[in-house]
Length: 267
Ligand SMILES: NC(=O)c1ccc[n+]([C@@H]2O[C@H](COP(=O)([O-])OP(=O)(O)OC[C@H]3O[C@@H](n4cnc5c(N)ncnc54)[C@H](O)[C@@H]3O)[C@@H](O)[C@H]2O)c1
Image (cartoon, rainbow, N blue to C red; front, top):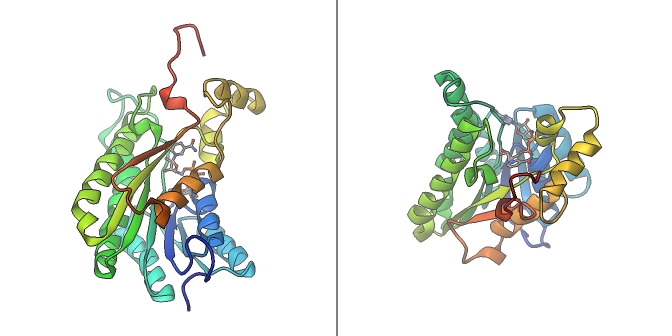
């Protein structure tokens, strides 16, 4: 199959997006396809990525869904090799899967902490471990890892999650240094509060969801919660040629959440 479409910012590129069943990953997979890339959508919700891929194909794009649990190296390898088998190359890898874990170090069992690192950080290692040799042989590639503002800032009860998200930033920098000479760029996107199933599950503590969104938005200088498409646009920038001199960087997309201070009595 010829990779991608011949028009768009990612014409004839091939991309793999993990966590593509919903939220940020789905929005990114759709945007990359609209910009001309052939896309492999990987997620452990295999039926959902198969449906999204069928939608995209019906709209004239190249897309395949692959049931993938990112806790398993063999499944990650299969997802990435789906890109090379179907479309002949691998230009873009968006390591996007993430799951919130709440804990205080004093209460968190070693098992709980390790499981959080497994899903949120080792998944990124697995994707990079498989993709880097393929991209090295090609002499080009762009990897975008989804971290979080929680990789930079402390929020209560996120010890393991914040550790994983900060670890992604270290891995991103290190890979950028090691693989830059091979033509591979590696960057991180750091979302703030983004309206996805994950974020809704976090904030929906009462029935008045609209009020909770409003309260969260007031803490953000741009006075709104992000959309999955806001993050997808940042991934598109980092994935494509517009960022060809950018590597090892942390692109914060949070409406200003992480640069705003607050007084003790402010929300
Ligand atoms: N939504 C936010 O406010 C926010 C903020 C900062 C960072 N992030 C990060 O953005 C990324 C995407 O988050 P989202 O908000 O879109 O979440 P989401 O829950 O909407 O989507 C995550 C996707 O990952 C998939 N997934 C979970 N575990 C998996 C596994 N083991 N193997 C394969 N797939 C798995 C889920 O099925 C889901 O489709 C995550 O890395 C998250 O940590 C999100």
